[in-house]
Length: 365
Image (cartoon, rainbow, N blue to C red; front, side, top):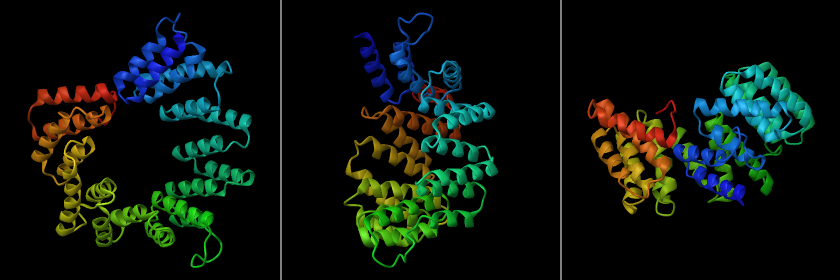
């Protein structure tokens, strides 16, 4: 039927991650409606697409629609949480907070509701309220890993690294980590290592990942390589990557690229050359691959070889297999490099326009 056909077409267009296509998806849903009333069956899809576009106009339309539906009691839990996030993002936190309190009173012990509310409190800097809510949530849930994640996030935002460490250690196996460990305990160790990475406890993350890899190798090896490459012993990371590149080329290349970005001034020239050699080796494996074509441009840009980066991005944009998001990034990066060089201003404006059509009128463009 017509509703099903609209849903299929709109879903497909949205899946392209193309700003213009998401607008077409909204137009398809609106076609044939009276007074802009979206059919009930298509309303959830419409409300998902609108804020995903990321521009202020779409945010405003989504908020206005969802606020009316909320007053009518027609928003489900996930839509209420989305509306609260939109309020927070558009500097209407008091409305968002009121909505969250009402949602919390309705859904009681729901983990998603508690997590969303506490996370928004932390984002807004309401640390004492967030702490109080974490304590209350801890009393009503068995998911202490989630409690630790929230506690760690709060401590990290407060600049309290000792608090981060307490939160992380609170969910580790109570027995010595040198003895036998069950599969569930090893999974906990890996999860805690991930949190440690997120909250700036890199040495602790490395310690846990070494333990995990010792027991589960090759599982977790790229987590360990990443923490070493970004924050630890670069020489050890390079040795791991040089051994692993033939088996997992793209995983190694992505880590090498990020290490070049984050540690460019810290690493010696020999280490930077080895990282670039790894990346170049992976790129050369398939010159027609869009991901590798983008990596080539980003690599030259990181090395501050801007002429080569411009050539690489221009070459990448000629690749018919480039996805819309890849094209947007290439357009954006290329226009920035051209502007920095003070050349081809007219071309820059066209490139920015092309990127905006794909990704929308976002601040980074």
